Amino acid sequence: MYNIFDSFEIVIGIHKEFKTENFYKFIGDSDSIRLEILKDIRFKDLVKDIQIPIWLLRHSFGINGSEEDYSDIDIHSIEDIFERRRVELKHSLIGNSSIRNLFYNGLKVPVKENSYSHAVGPIHAGIIEPGHFRFSVTGEYIDHLTIRLGFQHRNIIQQLKGKSPLQVMAIVESIASDSTIAYQTAFANIYEDVCQMEIPDEIKIIRMVLLEIERVAIHIGDIGAIAGDIGYYPLHGLCATDRGVPLGLMETLTGSRFGKASILPGEVRLSQGLDISSLMSLSANLKSMFRRLEKEFIRAEKSSSIRERLDDCGIVSKSIILQNSFVGLIARASGMKMDLRLSEKLYLETGMNLELDRENLKGDAWSRFYLRFLEVKNSIQWLEKILPELSLVNLKKNKLSILSQIKFKSGFYYKAIESWRGPILVALEINQKGQIQNAYIRDPSVLNWHALELAVKGELIGDFPLNNKSFNLSYAGFDL
Image (tube, rainbow, N blue to C red):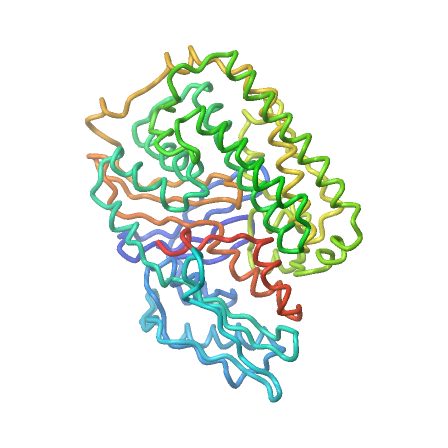
């Protein structure tokens, strides 16, 4: 089974163990995601006219790949590399619908005369996860960057198979720990569909609250990291400390700074002793934190030296977004209207304004920096309003339990949730006991790593850390 997913068509594969005669086409737009079944589509027809990054196939099939030798290609022609990939895929076809020979054996990239190839990783200093970054550089400018991940295989898919819903939930919160709430919500929603549970709005809203707190916490951390990378320490220092406010709010609500074990099928587990007065106090703390952040961000915005570093650095244009099906924060930073929250009526009914200022967003490092601030502002304004209005009594009264379920409706289920990075996709095949038979999990980073490769082409190699931080993509979300 192969999927074409997200706002613009791109091929991904769901694990080859799936036994089905149908192909699924996921089409997402700014307002909805709908599912269409396409029959009798052959894989060779899907790859014929579409530029498919090889790592996307590796991720989708859960395997590695063969040696990629691009050393004789014109380094200035990305189209030549795409063409070579198509040829490699064609040679890897068996019959009409399967692929072979994708075991990873290395990478060769073109290096011009008087240029050099510079490798970073997969072993890095500090706590960064493993990833291989191969630069082709002339002087101080990047001719080409090739990124290869997959060095840390955590066996997530196999761990999920055969597990009960409650066992599964303990695993999925660690798929990408900076998106704990998003992954918990996606899996919980699937199990609720399997059990045909009607979830009260109170439960949905508190999940939305936790999701926005997660968004605020990570965005503030990223704003500070970008500021630190350009040497602007007033904003860096503020964010380093005030990131603790949303994390503290998450801990107060759930008992965990990252919301671990807070969302289960049919329920949200909040800390004991919460009351309206404590929610009012938390809302006030959030408001005070944002006033401090806004003051320092406006100060930074007026600094010509900061704008000089970020303006026109690492541009990912709308046309590149469209061509490559990039998603989430990266797409929105180019001015695209791509946000699955627009399809959730409760956001609109509870006063969330998702119409952000897109006129000043042109896909560069400044846009990714500025968009994070806009999203923090937007989320905090909504949280200030919604936190004091939460009905904790009704929430506890409406708790549902999946433990009482004996029989589940078997079948294929999927959910897409807008995490702070972008849409995460979870697709599960579940049996009548509620056990996972097969699974496909795709973090938005899987699609967007290629955006970083394209963004740094022609940029100063000294600006790579800055560009990398402005993307903040996930290694863990890729290496399942």
